Image 1 (cartoon, rainbow, N blue to C red):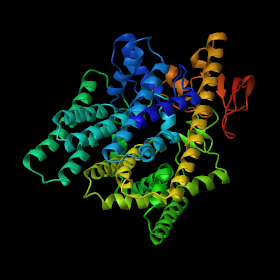
Image 2: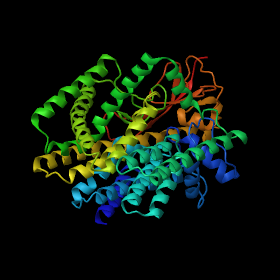
Image 3: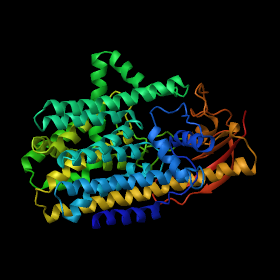
Image 4: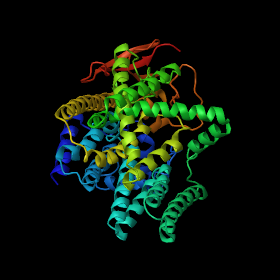
Length: 524
C-alpha cells in the first residue's frame, strides 16, 4: 500500500511541474477528441476519417470525463492521466505478485515507465497509446491472477479488459493469442483448457469483426480505418526480400529504442552477469547499432528528440525535429549501446526462465506477437513504448532472486534521476510552447477575426478546423490541410512573411522552443 501511495504522490508532484492544463489538442488527439465531442454534444457516435483504430473504448472513457462540465481537451487529458496512473499501479501489483517486498524494486518498473519521456508526454494527451497500455496491463494482470488463484470471476474480468483493449486498438486481439500460448505451454493442454483459450480468441476476434461491420453498414467507417492493414498487405505482396528487409529495419529500430528505454532496469542485471558474457553482448550491441548507421536508419522520432519531446508540428519543422548535433548523437548512441547490451542480458535470462514462469512466457509472447504485427508498418518511437511494461513485469520476477550490490543500485538510481529530470523538463516545455501557440491562434481568430481557412496554425489546429481527406498538398505549403497560409504560426521567421508578434516561451531545456512567431504573408 505504501508503494502505491508513493507512486500516486510522485505522480502528482510531476504534474505540478509539467502543468497539463489547457483546452487544446496535441498530436493526433484532435481527431479522437472530435469523436468524443460528437457523442457528448450531439449524441452521435461518429469517428473522424483520420481514425485508423476502433477507438470505441477511448471515446466512451473520455466522454465520462466530459459529462460534468462539457467537452474540453483538458477533461480528455485528465482521463488519460487517470489511466496512466492505473498502469503504474498495475506494475506495482505485478511486482508484488512475483513475491517482491523490497520498496525499491517494487517501484523500479513503475518509475522507469513514469519517467520515460515518451510515456510521460503521451500521458498528458488524449492519444491512444497510454489508454491502450492501461487496458492491456489490466487484462494481463487479471488473467495471471485468475489462473494462479483459480478465480473464474477474475479471469472473466481480465477477458473483458482484453475486449475493451481490442475495441480501442486492433492489436488488443493479441492478448487472447498470447494468453493461449502462455496458458497452454505452462500446463497440460486438456480439452477444457484448449476450449478456454480458443473461446477467448474467438470471442474477442468476433467482437472486433462485428464492430467493424457495424461501422461499415451504418456509414460510420472512417476512410483510414483499414490503412494499416493495407500497408501490411502491400508490404507482404512486395516479395520475400523487401519484406525481410522491412522486418530487419524494424528490428534494429526496436532494439535501439528498447536499449534507451530499459537502461535503468537493465543496470540491475549487472549483478550476476559474467564479465565475458557482458563483453560479448557489448560487441553484439555495437554491431547492431553500427548496422543502423550503415543502413542510415537512425532515430525515427515522433515524440522523443534531442530537443525534448514533441512532435514539433509548426512550420518550418518536421515531426521528428532531431537537430542532428554530434553531441546528441554521441549521448543517444552511448545510452543505446549500454542499454542494448543489458537488454540482451535481460532477454537471455527471461528466455531461460520461461519454463518456470508462465507470466514471463505470456509477456514475451505478447511482445513477440506485437512486433510481428507492427514490423511492416512505419515505425515510430511511441510504438516501442508497449514493450517497456512487458519487459518490466518479467524483470520483477527475475530481480527478486538476485542480490543487489550497492554500486549497481546507486548507478541505476542516478540514471533514473537523469531520465526523470529530462522527461519532466521536456514535457513541461512541450506543453508550454503549445499553450503559447494557441494564445497566438486565439489572437488571430478572436481579436483579428481571421478565419481558419486563412491560417496555417500547425498540424493540430488545421486538423481540428480544416481537415480534408481529399486534400492535395500544394508546393510551398505545409502538408497538413492548409487552404490559405496568409497567416502562419511558426517556430521561426519565414521568407515572404512579416512578423506580427513574437511570443516568448518559458522553456527549461536549452535546445527547446523559446519563441513562437505570428507571421503575415507579404508576397503573393
